[in-house]
Length: 299
Image (cartoon, rainbow, N blue to C red; front, side, top):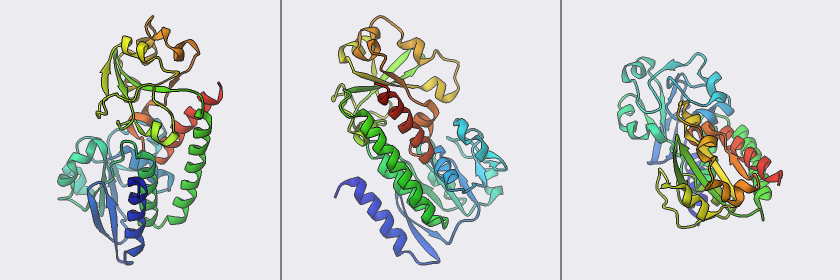
């Protein structure tokens, strides 16, 4: 069985087998028992906030910033309990949550927050991002009594995925790059953003890019030699609200201009906060798929 199917199957099995009083939840660190339906939750992961928000679940405690404009309304009425990286244990303790959810940037603090309340590490990453996102959606649906809503949302996500796959089919090879001011990194299959290739069956311009979390630092000559048909761009500065040089300015040079992607106007600037901060959240993932579908369908 493929890892993605196994993960989903395990999540479903654990949840369905749980008693009314307790639920075994599959997390990034293994199975964690959760007693009853949590009433007061604290969340330190933007992707989790995104999916919970789609289900109509409102965390009582959130980080000071989520960096995703579409999620700002989710912070209304929520206590500030630290940042996406660092929990404020005093504020968290004062909130007295039944459950804490961490992931990605805050995952390293799971053992710390677990001293305050049961903690779930719901990190989503890599090639299996979409299947993991759906597994998390199903988990939250069961955990908070929103199973039917979760199934309906999963169907909507599947439809957007199918549309994106159809849009990219036969349109050529793509290279995913992230700009960080004047610096550029490339990402291929198996990397942090490799899910785009895996989920959409989108051929990579280069298969041998190092599958590091932070990508492979590359030059503009590298991009020219790779000569992608499509250039999928993440502007990190835009994602985090930095004043660093933007992606369009960084890539606007003679070397990148020699690529097929640039010549044909096939450079796609992905929704930065969604792709960098909250990828794996249902709503953010849908917006990413919609952006890809729109760009590829126009050609």
